[in-house]
Length: 344
Picture 1 (cartoon, helix red, strand yellow):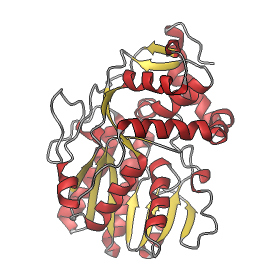
Picture 2 (cartoon, rainbow, N blue to C red; picture 1 turned 60 degrees about the horizontal axis):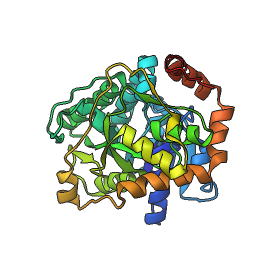
Picture 3 (cartoon, rainbow, N blue to C red; picture 1 turned 135 degrees about the vertical axis):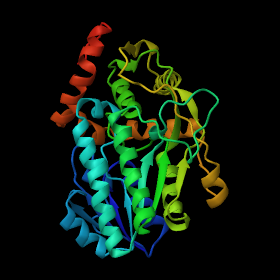
């Protein structure tokens, strides 16, 4: 196959690109990425000399460029998105452009050229899940943040194109993903890098929000399996069943690094913070045979160890990016002050 991978210089996208090139020697990838703050050429470093990989800088909302690229490939995998709930609360409009308008542009191109599109989505579209329940693909979406609303909007466009035009589309909904090369605004890499610098870890509210933690390589493998064997028009949940409260994850993280628990700073919660995400993943397991390969302990420890061993990667972002520092001060500065801490 020749694939157009959008957002392929981002976190999960770059993991997917590397995995496909390793596992499918005959495949080729055109990697389209806007290379904004989270799209990092360093994430695909080492692929410059591989004739099967071509990095193109561009926006998925650029209809002319997308049309040109879609014509030349067999299928499209769309990772390109604004992804952070916290940022969506600060700037909802940018999420509408990337996660809805951009998806429409891709859909229009794959419809006209008869290609397959896999839309990478999130478990957050299900909203806050009550204890004991696990969301199924047939459950209604109950979005509670601009981020999840925009991702649901992109999904709905995909479903409408499948029903109205017969466009070959698939959707995956992934749980909270961690691993190497995740932009350090997200909780796990933020807390690892803060802890390595002995800075406070700003935990929202009581820290009892529950997430299902999935390793990036397992997530990428599920996406590739759905692309190649999934049924058109279908949605597939992708989760590892690693449900843990945030505060338990944070304490485990600190213990692994040998850092004191007093680095934890409980700060005012973000608006509309969902307490629990949890999905039923029987469909992808039973139909396609996918299983995660890592336990929660392996997932967290491998992630921590990568950031410990690659400090030059994240230090270049944290010390050299005005975007990161501006965001950090807006999001956490006043919260840390309210908790009697300094944002640094």
